[in-house]
Amino acid sequence: MIPDDAKPRYDRDGFVVVRNFLDRDALQLLEENVNRYIREVVPHLPAGDAFYHDRSKPETLKQLQHMGQDSFFDGYRRDEQWKELAELLIGEHVEAQEPEWFNKPPGTEHPTPPHQDNYYFCLRPANVATLWLALDAVDEENGCLRYVVGSHRHGIRSHAATKVLGFSQGITDHGDDDVRNEQTILLEPGDLVAHHGETIHRADPNRTASRHRRAFAMVFRGISCHRDEAAYARYLNAVQQQHSEFSSKTS
Ligand SMILES: O=C(O)CCC(=O)C(=O)O
Image 1 (tube, rainbow, N blue to C red):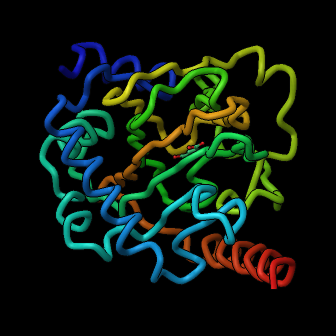
Image 2 (image 1 turned 180 degrees about the vertical axis):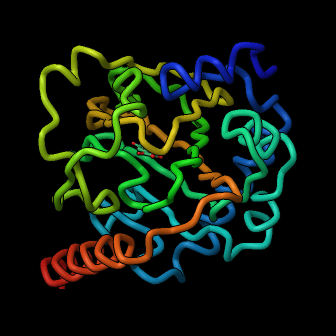
Image 3 (image 1 turned 90 degrees about the vertical axis):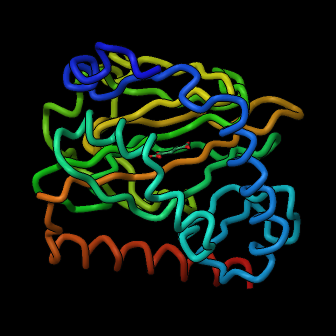
């Protein structure tokens, strides 16, 4: 299931695709729980844990954070299959952050700005990986991920505030060279892509009329990482500012 060359590819490119990471039963169990969470938990969550394109339209739900507040998802952080892949790629014992869910609902202008996850996490060393599992078929039309190949080897680029709720920071000097070196990641439900915390990535909006682009993700950090607290406080400040700008627009 995990390809033999997963680790060398991840080290070289900053990402690796694992086809059929979850079999049918495991995918079904995950989907059932995501659907239950959306139906039963999401309506009671504070705005910071569930982002909508338009809060008055439940079908425009686009991002869930802090899913570990649910006992299924808290336990899922310790799932052996996910942990095994994360440890292989990161090269040390890991711990999982709380699960997240990302959607691009059809007919919404919701791009993912180019960014590096570790600009948000502020972990040193950057022994951190995001494991992102497709729940829908993901392609160029509905907003697949696009990675700048090898970009995890060149450090953190300059970021600044974006206008995209859920992705508060984007790379300021992202340009043609980055786009030329991008690889698009086309996935079927149950396929997974893992990326290094410093790999530059982005995604276009969903241009389809009716297909969602749902994904479930967990971030794993090596136990040797520590957080640069000063950098993290600056990041949290920027997030807070973005959220208050969004709530003053919608209230
Ligand atoms: O789902 C997306 O469009 C972006 C996800 C992402 O940037 C991440 O998981 O690091």
